[in-house]
Amino acid sequence: MGENRACPRQAVGGRTVEKGFISLEEALSLSRAEVRREYADHINPGLASLLSLLDFDKRFVRAQGVSVWDEEGNEYLDFLGGYGALNTWHNHPRILAAVERVSEVPNLLQASLGALSAALAHNLALLAPGDLSVTFFGNSGAEAVEGALKLARAATGRERILYCEGSFHGKTLGALSVTGRQKYQIPFRPLLPGTQPIPYGNLDRLEEELRRGEVAAFIVEPIQGEGGVIVPPAGYLKGARELCTRYGALLIVDEIQTGLGRTGTLFACQEEGVEPDVLCLAKSLGGGVMPIGAYMTTPRIWQRAYGGAEKALLHTSTFGGNARAAAAGIAALQVIQEEDLPRRAREQGDYLLARLELLRQRYPMIRQVRGRGLLIGLEFEQPVQGLLAKLGGELINRLAEEYLGAMVAGELMNRHRIITAYTLNNPNVIRLEPPLTVTREQVDRVLAALEEIFSRHRSFFSMVATTARTALGASGRRREGE
Image (cartoon, rainbow, N blue to C red):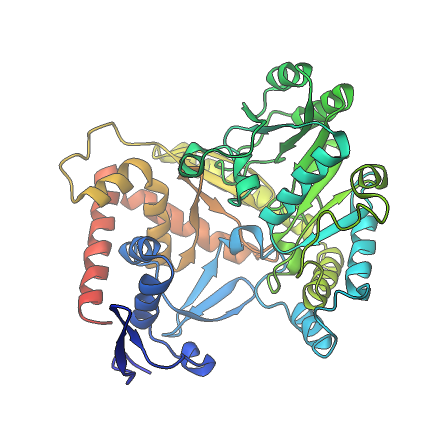
């Protein structure tokens, strides 16, 4: 199906719409230009424009392992990994088979107890640290955080929630209220009352706020993913555990991105032997196939919040723990354990970090390399203020001043066929977060690509010029109706 797909239009309510639905088969054959148009018309025009500008709106039609293929048959390495949702790689056959195995089982049947969700909760209890053995299932990381915040208030009878500057816990209203970037918060204020940001990695400030009293919980990421892959000082999480215990606040550890092997241990909090009161999971829990989120807690905390028949339905989710998602979760946990993905993440991550550090020493454009396991960030030096004022259009200048990471990601995508992205709270950082099955050969391919980019671009001007050419080329293709 091409751009001239016959589809009559008619005026409805002052706007032009297509008659008839796009069928599944038609959707699978939409061209790149058609997808861009539908996205701009019906989903997010601004995002469609940004991705088109960087030539990131490619149409991918197949995925397996660490690779994806575009409609022209070109192979790309996926070093973004669904923002941590693809620890078990794209379309793992065991996870797909698990979902297919339950295709005739009732997926949603609320007037009963689900065998598959019960089994998944049992398996999580065997793996989780400490006494975390009660699980609530939802559909996403943000929903897991929402549930954890409600649990903390219900169990403690307190209101205040402490969170960290630079954190990212989701964009639903409650999760956004504990997400530490004002850009995302300001348009939606007032947010939840009683939420207080504190500096990440600073135990003195944490104790100062805990000492003030009435703190229900402190929510924290073991490593800040969207904050720019920020690793806290050694002992920080352990110290936070001790302080929360001393002052009677719950410790909520958000392992939505760091969990299930990503950082070299099954859960990142295990690096310091920390046992949280609440553990949030999502992303790779569904094996990259089904959406699922969860929070885990102890029987004592659950009983205080939701114990007994009278309180059992205070917090529920229609699709939470559905059969297909639970089946995917069961299979994903088996794959992670049997293929020893935490060990593989640590080994490949140590190798990648060491060689990225060598690149940093050679190329001043790289400011810092940091991370653990296969959650790695490269932060770039920013250009001198005003240096690029006369270059290109307003959007190109803004990309240069705030989104150098996006430009490096664009080079990796368009020149080397490697998929990465910048971190949401720090756009001058690109993340390297591939599936945990990535091979040494694939890691070396990324290292060679970065070497080529930084040896060729010795200045910000060069990088901006390349981005401008990419943008002009993409604009031309759009005008031609690619």
